[in-house]
Image (cartoon, rainbow, N blue to C red):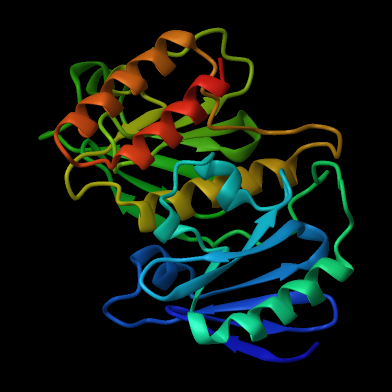
Length: 283
């Protein structure tokens, strides 16, 4: 291939073994894209490619990553909105023929029915990274994740525990709940811990989000970088846990919150139906 396909907010550059996605830095570009800047995606990291009609005279070229290939998408666990999916390239409808050509070229080099990747194939956002949550400043230097509590937001349980520092070797995974829904948070899963408080605001290994605190473009790259560092530190056959929505009570609560957002008109009928189906599939 070796060609370039320019779309809205991003440009895909095709080479013999990968796709280099460069994101624009304009004011209309989603902040997550601006934070990522660019990503090189090896062909082996992709499971499939689709081309579908988009909104308002556009078409969408969508590359679907293999499970376990990209720490960013692993941490997101299906919570990104379509407009925030870095694997979607939106193009004017008159580019459909060209987009179909590139889609076919990619399909020709992909391995069909590829199993989940045994290690991350797409590089994580580089450390150091930091962001402000509602109750703490979270920072990660590539080796240690730290939470420094804010007296204006942290619970008494967190103040009692004191500021927290977690070496990557102490962790087994991360759990990220998008700040774009109620009760968003980032939780570090500690290796060998028998129990962690269910409520993130009582867990010293978690920070909670809020309006303007822990936005997607800051907290998700952070979660991905920590997850990738955990994977790198573990034996090849060990798999870090990402976004473990395993508790039925937690899923039921998220569906209830989703319903409230739907009733308030903040979520469309289509978004509500799709997200509810995703949550129910995890039971």
